[in-house]
Amino acid sequence: MLFFGSIQGYAQPKECPVLSELKKTSIKDKKEVIEALNTLIPKTYGTGLDDFPDIYTKWNVVTAKPFPKTVGNKEEEDYFGMAKTFCGKEIAEKSWLVRLDFPKAPGANLAQGQIFLAKSKEKGWFVWFQYH
Image (cartoon, rainbow, N blue to C red; front, side):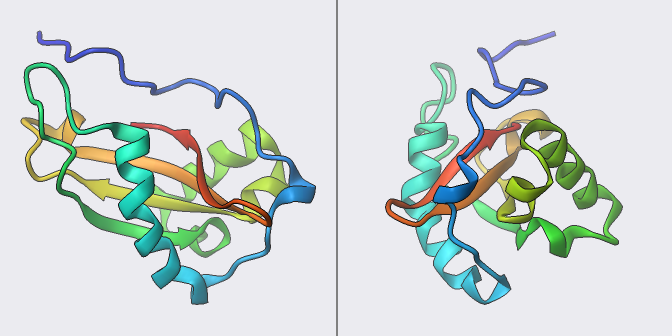
C-alpha cells in the first residue's frame, strides 16, 4: 500500500465561516466560482506531491453548485450533510460544493477532490474545507 503524504480527509474544518460575513450566492454565480478556482485550487492543493510534482496543475470541474442544489443527487447530497454537520445549516446553505478531477493524478484517491466554498462579503470566494 502506498501513502502519498497527509491528505486532509475525514476531518473537521479548521474553523467554520462566520455567517454574518458570508454573501448570499446562487447558481447564477457559477461562472464566477469557476473563475475563482484558478486562484483557489493552487492555494488549496499546491502543485503536487514529492513523487508527483505537478499532479494538481490541471483539473476538470465535475460539479460546481450551491449545496442546496445538491439535494436529490445522493452522492453530492452527502457532502451537503457533511457541511451541515460541520458548520450548521445556515453556513451550508450559503456554501458551494466543488468536485474536481485531477487527470495527472496516479489513482482514484488522488485524482478526486472535493472542496467547500463560500463567498465573503469583503474578501470574495474562499475554501473553508477540503475533503480530498
